[in-house]
Image (cartoon, rainbow, N blue to C red; front, side, top):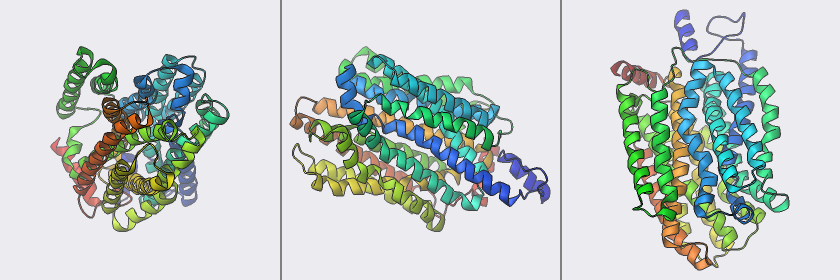
Length: 501
């Protein structure tokens, strides 16, 4: 039994305190380490999540200051989400191979430096480039937050820990439009990036001193897989973002779509036949793993694309200032601060499947509600119920989805699972902005309030439909699964799949 405990600890990449009994680390050291890990990983996750949405309420000011068309505004958001998405699994693999704390520190340092570069950007091209580098840093940093947290927190307490982590990430989502709007209106849009610099400089020494180093046994890098998925996803998103300006039948757009699809297909085949792929496709034979990842991607396609358009609607059509627009988005974006810890607790008690399913359904209903009522003169009172329903749906999804994900894999594969899931979130965000933005541009534009509404209405209906598909995907998750940690059945399933692979 003692040997088995040692092997389990090694499989999770954990280290025991000197002098601790075998298999039972000192309770005080465990509590302290778990507390610091929760604080550091939550704040780091806050920064990465903040920069997904912090620019949304600043987009009209950035367009006025630096110029640029709709595609440039899309790239201001998508340059971050795209590099973030395509390198997340590689970032997780780097941490497993060279040390999770070491790579976490490197990613945090790069993210902080790129934030300063974005703040100093003299033009739209420089801003887009800095945002892309920010995404690289976040891609290394973000998946390791969950891996480090999972290793530090006992299995029976992970549901609540993930709930707190989710609440802090929810706070970033909530405060992103508000912080971006407030800083843009009262100081300058440049300060939405300067904000990351002092936080990053504070976190670097704390992480160095308080986080323990850990590795995944036998971890190897998959350069071929990284190149295939990175170029494939870039080609697809590039084609979607530029389709409006270049035309859907242009050689550039068709080349991006076809070439990207071929490369993604090659990546999937690589994951099936390679000895040590960055994302083993056998993991998707686990119905729970496949279901929660599909639901996650669909959730972020619908949510990000809608927020991108609605935050501009509040300013461009209704006439709110950036701060006012951010405040009025709070019933949607701020709900995770209140509901995410409760959702994490509920997932420990009744299972994550019903909570996640309800969250996706509410988000779909909220977007459909918006599509029904939106008009150039719609009052805020009419918008408020839809905002609250969307916010409750997003809040119910975030923490339980993480819990469900971690329950489907064994400890040694949690880094891969975290990287894959975070990658699909960001891919979903980039695709959501590109797809819903393309629908908006095909039916409307910025010329007038009526023209904007004409474009945003079908985009919202498509977003609601995508979230409806996400609800169906969540229902495929096996019943009775999704506690705080992997169950014995989950571990057994993962080992059987590994042997089969």
